Image 1 (tube, rainbow, N blue to C red):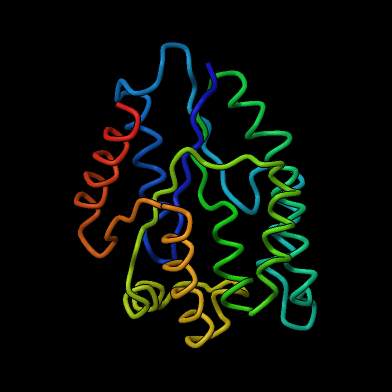
Image 2 (cartoon, rainbow, N blue to C red):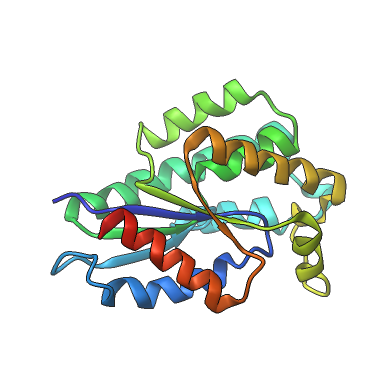
Length: 209
């Protein structure tokens, strides 16, 4: 039996890392996964050895050494192609479940809406990189931009987070548009950690129970 592919997505500061950790413990004990299936936690960019090198180039470079917007887009596509071919698809074919922090929707939100790159080109690159693989469920942690910025205050920003409020506003609009277009399941991320966790658990029970 093919495994399940679940994605957590949303603005930085929405609580993805916290909820990834919660679900990594909750899902295997939930009764939703068949006997013998493992849960594989991963992320984009950086879910593979090649991806970790790409992540360093994308997020940790100085402005003087930063990739140009189109180069940035192609690096995300390369990371995704490696991720799908060497980690996600083999895991699903084994019957394991995959839980990923971000997937292709983030590229549309950040590079398509945030950077203003050609969305048709982004869709074409997505089709090439994923070879048609789509998540069984994308959980969108929806958070107002002002709260995203507030939560990130005092934290070390990566290159993309430091692009400024206007850029992040376009990204937030992009996430809302992509969520509508792709039928994502929205979860209000402005509640307590426990409230968000319960909402995610209920959505997973509703979909896979």
